[in-house]
Figure (cartoon, rainbow, N blue to C red):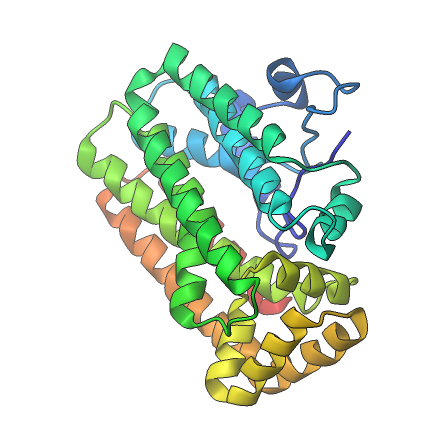
Length: 324
């Protein structure tokens, strides 16, 4: 069975997901729920979630409670988690058959990765939404369009083009940002529009913070060389790399050559250069800025312990990313 989580799906320690899981109580989604939706452990389509509280169903629950809902729609939680699985599968499936990109993907998830598996998860999510809350289908389609746009950028960057700040922002917004915004918007479905939009903006900025925390954690990861190599092959623009290239153009040229001729030895050497050029410092500055904007977005949401929990969540991810 494949463990279809992102390479650093767990942000640096301290994000407080366990305490949030306790806050929303039974609002979280369990492994059995996903098994019922996408197959049994013996099936190659089965999605085994990471052994931590899932951030996406937690966001749906927090947004619903913060907007005044008296119950949580578990079908919405299933939908966003299935979309996350689909996004991961599609990202890993990018690259030509037999290429190094695909070999790295196979090694990471221990299973064949195909567009068919991602499409299965996407269709399942759409079916659940249509049956339970058809009014969110427009939001789902908009998010899927963002995913598709982000994958087009990924294929460009796999060719070795030096990523820019705009590239990083587009990638973050069409991946984690889009998904987290969807979680918060559908959590507040049926509630006041201004509140739902404020929660969606919070989700967008939270997604960027989460994205940066992942980027930063790569350089401190025990197997950082392998993860950095995988990200280069994936065409994912890393903010520390982008920030380092802004400060030192040589870093950008080195990164471009690394993408074209990847190796673990080069990855280890390049990681040190990125840090020496100030890439981490620049990324952490951006993380603090995005954290502040996420908290500002919540000012349109009525005060409650759930809004406070959302404020603490984005702050704790930023602090964890700085400490990593």
